[in-house]
Image 1 (spheres, one colour):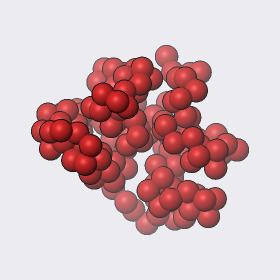
Image 2: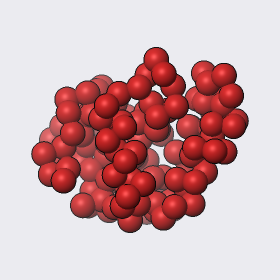
Image 3: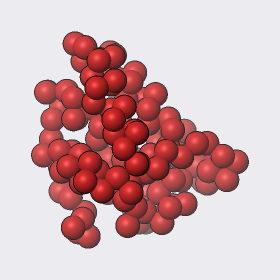
Image 4: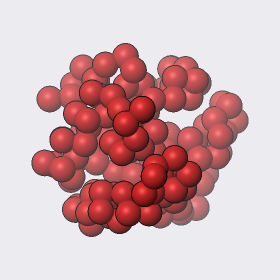
Length: 142
């Protein structure tokens, strides 16, 4: 199984007020098994922007905390025509362009998008390609 990690998960690794045990569980598994994870390239920009806005040392947190993860074996998918075409399907279902890219990558990889965005998850309920971490870890997590 490939797990597509949303930026909403990653920022919880660095922001005390946003921390969540399920985000921490994702991080532990990602560090141990990066080959089971993927992100669209926009993940990097989203996480950097949020950390710079909300973390007291956002740039340093990104360099010391996120860059090693990015260089540790996680699949970083660039935007392609195929991914954009798949994302368009999800935009039509009501997702933002950003969220649609995560959903499209999950579909393309036959994986599951891990997110804290309950509204986006509801838009995809019948697709079976997302899991909202406020409800716990996915059934097939281990």
